[in-house]
Every structure is written in structure tokens, then in C-alpha cells.
Image (cartoon, rainbow, N blue to C red; front, side):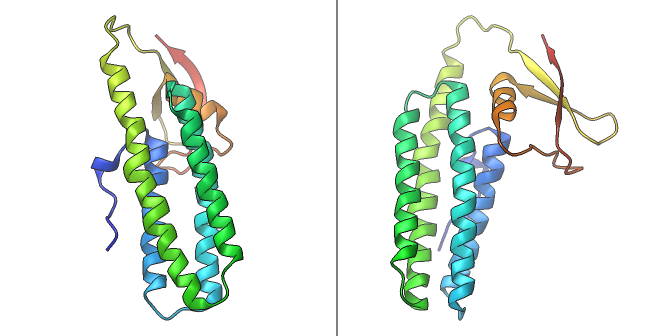
Length: 187
């Protein structure tokens, strides 16, 4: 059985963690599809969902790694490219619904969750170590964002601000579901 999302898998980046949670959910849906009577089209739709979301997530995750100065960024990018290429090749080589089901399990277990549980945890380990090695304890700069919630403000760290600024998709408030907008820098 596949593991469920847990706080122990957090990389302490709200957006990346939300994306990881969605990927865990997709993996569980894939597991259910692979273990039930489904049509070839249902399985293909699931693979397409996975594929599309993974590409978006990988791009955002790479922006985050760049923002925090992650030293293994290029190596991690290569892993992402290999997963996407392997997945594309896998989808092209499928001939039957049962083969589709087998492949979707490989995708959910081996590629996705193994990648999150092993490779992405290295990013969090680096972030923690880098944070603890800041001997000057300089005050961190924050950036203020607003959304449609009355009086609500979102206080983002510099790395989050860089991520949001460079993201290709809008970042939304969890409560009102509206895009957050930059207001000003603090400190």
C-alpha cells in the first residue's frame, strides 16, 4: 500500500508541500484505478493528469531550489528530466489496459513517491542545515502579499517571494482561493 501524506514529508515550503500533497493524492487515485476494473481511457486520463502535474511541480520545485541556493540543483534537474522522459516513453509503449495498470503503479510508487520521499527530503535537509549555519542571525527580510480576504496579509520569506515572483502559475490563498498580490517589502 502507498504511504499517505504526512507532515514528516514536508519541505517547509507551503506551495511545494501543497503540490506534494496533490501528487500523493494522485498516486492514491492511480493505485485505486490500477486495482479495479477500469477502461483504458480512464487509465490514460490518470497518466495524463500525473504527467501534466509532475511537469508543473518539477518546474516550481526547481525554482525553489534555485531560490535557496541548493547545490545539487543540476543533478536534481537531470532526475526530473529522466522521470518525464521515462514516463513519456512508457506511455508510448503501452498496448493493453492491463499493461497500462501495471505502468501506472510503477509511476505512482517507484518514480513519484520514491522521488519525493528520498530526493526531495534532501532539499529540506539542506535548507535546515543552511538555516542553522547562519551565525550572524541577520533579521530575515519578509514580503507582504494580500488576497481577497478582508484584512488578511500573507507574510512571505525572501525565498518564497522569489518563488512566487518567478512562478508561471498564480499562487492562491487557501481560504479565498484568489491569487495573492505583492504589496511591499518588510524589514
